[in-house]
Image 1 (cartoon, rainbow, N blue to C red):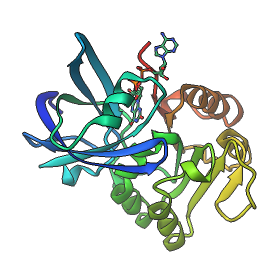
Image 2: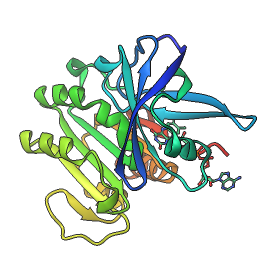
Image 3: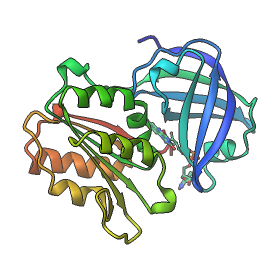
Length: 243
Ligand SMILES: Cc1cc2nc3c(=O)[nH]c(=O)nc-3n(C[C@H](O)[C@H](O)[C@H](O)COP(=O)(O)OP(=O)(O)OC[C@H]3O[C@@H](n4cnc5c(N)ncnc54)[C@H](O)[C@@H]3O)c2cc1C
């Protein structure tokens, strides 16, 4: 897939939670990408060149004219501050797409797909929703574990919940790391790793990990050491900060 460089224009900005913004950008050329990939946004501010990576949170079929991302607002973060105050019409440069967090075609799907995300690390899996439905139709068992701090920070919940209600072989588990919750079918308290320990893992499972670097490293160790998977069965995208 070609790496393109183009100008993009902010179309809209919606707060999904107090700390997460949904940003939609107008493309000047079609962006050909696969669900799971990320782009780099670049701009200059106060004599400083800023370059930050963001997963694409919209499915590829929308990539002819626009794309979306979700950004966590970090205190005093350069991009976070820019996004917080940016208005529709703000222009920036985009490079991409990049990344290998890609699903095999549905016909080649493994018997089990395990997706683990923390925070905005859910973005690539949200972009994969149409593909996940294809996987489920092919009989693939899909487990999604989504870690956020508390219910106030939960977003993109309903599209996955609806899918879980439609397909009994789609297990959706939300883990609140900083909130006790009344345990329900999908809402739990604790870290995602705690729930993975008790998950049955098929020997040919494909695992995708996205988000906080500590979660990605912890889960990688768990799947390779305790669950006996090969490193090649695990795809990772770590949201490493730029300093
Ligand atoms: C492949 C990839 C995909 C990503 N996708 C996403 C995504 O979809 N959504 C998302 O929200 N993020 C994503 N990220 C992270 C993103 O690229 C940015 O790192 C993030 O948005 C923070 O950028 P910032 O400019 O706001 O913060 P920065 O200015 O980089 O600062 C980050 C934090 O560190 C603090 N800080 C800055 N400098 C220092 C210092 N010297 N010492 C101590 N603390 C310091 C700041 O106050 C702030 O809280 C991704 C990262 C990668 C690598």
